[in-house]
Image (tube, rainbow, N blue to C red):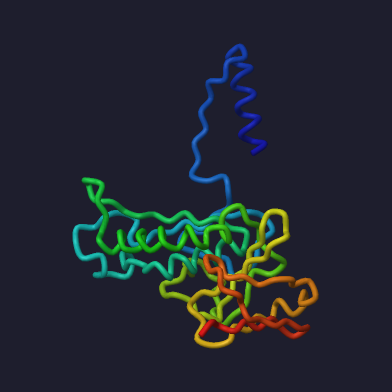
Length: 218
């Protein structure tokens, strides 16, 4: 940023106070192409990926690995993982020449527009927590390590509200039994209420120094 500011200031000086310099860049944030961070990052970063190939290919989108379309759960879990690690997700949806999308891409967007109104507050205007999450899914520390399949319901990703008063625990799947979150045992005495976004039903839960256990509704 200092380099850009210096360039624009010098440009304005050379043109009698009129800034005529132009700066173009792909991103001012460190980014990973089709790659996710295995750890929580101190500074903001960007995950740059695509729902399939980077551009429209005039054949079946499932015919090769590079253009294999991700389903909606995979995209949502990628988003939760990236945001929990102080990142932002830029997802490309390749278009045909007339601006239309693969039917599979339209399906992903349709499911995202259903998920966001209910769960969006756990993503937008949030900050990472002290730990990004827990669960069985482990990312390869090498590049090009993006998810190609959904995570499991035991994979939890954390975010918190900007004021730090609300902690969000995003389960990457529908729980198939009691949801045990060991990372929250350390703050058990601070947990006052547990709510399910989008639901008025009372949540059954208990917390101690070992973990927080949430019982799924019958």
